[in-house]
Image (cartoon, rainbow, N blue to C red):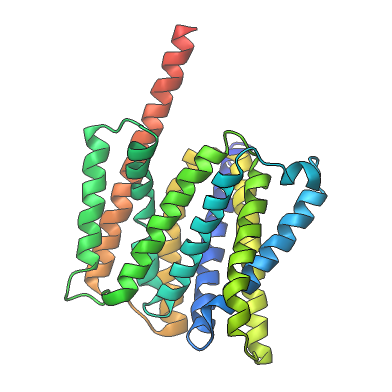
Length: 301
C-alpha cells in the first residue's frame, strides 16, 4: 500500500487528472469560441492568469519583488510571445476543427521539441530517435490525408500552434537555467495579458450570463490543471509524467463526441496512434540517455 501511494505514483495520478481537466477546458473553449471573439476570450484568460501569478508570487517564500527580477528579460519576452501565439492559434483551430482532431495534431509537439533541441541546443540524437521523428511525421501525414476529416487552414493553424508550443518548451528549458519557475510563469502571464489586451479591447461585446459562467469556468479549470501539473512535477520526475500527457487525446475523443457529436475518422485515429507511439518511443530513448549520462558521471567521480 505504501508503495502504491509513493510520491511518484501520486504525481503520475495528479498529472493524469490534469490531462482530463485540460481536455474539459478545451471543450469549454470550443463551446464559446464559435460565436465570440477569440481575442476577448484570450484577454480574459491571461488577466486571470496574471492575477494568479501576482497572488502566488506575493505569498511565496521569494516574495513579489524577487519574483519580478529576471536575468533574461529578452528571453522572457520571447517566451511570453510564443505562448501567446500558441494559445491563440489553438483557440482559433478549435473554431475550425473538432476537439479530437486539434488535440491529435497537437500531439506532434514532443517530437518537434526533439528536433528543435538538435538545431538550437546542439543536442545529439541517435538514429532511433530520428526514426521516431520520421514516424511521427508519417502519422501526421496520415491524419492530414485528403480522405480524412482534417484539412484546410484549421490543420495548418493547429500545426503552427504545436510548433509554437514546442518552441516555448525549448525556451523555457533555457530560461530555467537563470530564472525560477515562478518568475517564468509571471512573465508569461504579464506579456500575454499586455498582448491580448491590445486586441481584446477592440473586440468587446456583451456576453450573456451563461457565457460569462463558461468563460469563468475556463479560467478556473485551466488554473486548476496548471496547479495539478506543477504539484505533479514536485512529486515525480518530468520523464515519469511526460508519457501520460498523451492521455489528453484519449479524453478528448469521448468528450468531443458527447458535447459536439464529433467522432474522428479512421485516418485521424491511426495517425494519432502512430504519432503518440513515436513520441513515447522518443521519450523512452531520452530517459535511457539521461540514465547513461548519470551513470557515466558517477563512474567518473
